[in-house]
Image (cartoon, rainbow, N blue to C red; front, side, top):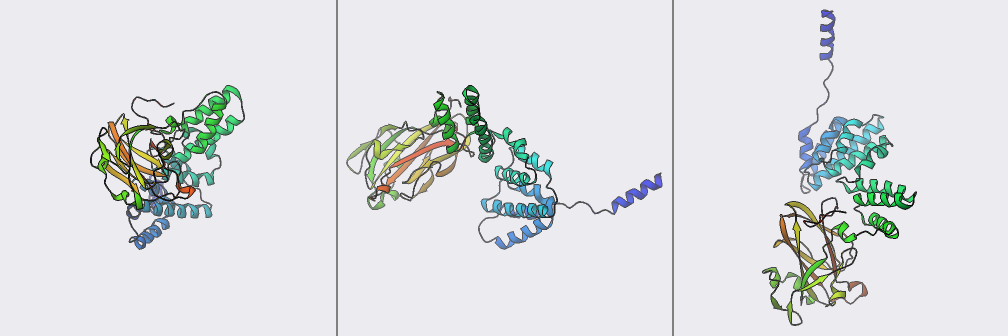
Length: 369
């Protein structure tokens, strides 16, 4: 018996050990910046792909903190390996990938990538996972979960339908789905506060117009950029200007400067609001406007875009910021040019506060629906 065991152990020692992921190559992809590393990146991808499925999970883990360029290379490596496994009729490691997908601490993009490839292998995965992802950190998982509830709600009537729509609303972050839900609930006598649901900022103080003829004012630092004094008066484009209140009851938070004040051509306005955060936290300020603009948060310029009338949509610009606990001052500089075409007359903006998944962050003291 002892001899047989020794022979068996000796035989096991002759079996090649499982491949180990080349973490150095994967890490080199993760931190890529600029185009200068393309040759090295291709080499790292080739090495990573050559080692096969053993690298699938390490690649997914590397998405955490990866540069945008690095994430693209990691995605390419993962998809190449996954496609090769599929072509060879070898299954992807379902249990490990499923566990990765369900862990919301992992990269949202990597989780979605793993899900899409695992779904090709097992069509029942959607039914197994998606209902539990209604409030997932990844907006596409939420979208899938909401879509399932909308199908169910359309098949029933009365209170059961209302309850399904209300449940779906808790996960809905996409405008089209929210509009469908709001329409159904409104028809049932249960209206939705869209401003609150999306986290739009609707009450502002505004001052102007200041001169932007020939679009020169964009680069000019008028007084509000150096001192935020909400009781001050300044020399404006058409005479003395002072801060005044402006608000909007538009469902999607659109502040219409042209409609509510005047569409001053070749002008610019400053708008200020205060957002009280319950805690120090990361957030996204999502802006939609057809006008040129600059944005300051707590006195710091966080983003700007000198472009006029290319079009506008909700969440057109996404600006990551760090909110401090308590009051945060947000100031916009919104510039109108002198174009006379009908499509160049909008003088509007909409701004909301949310997390990276599009879920509204409400001011301290306000509760979600």
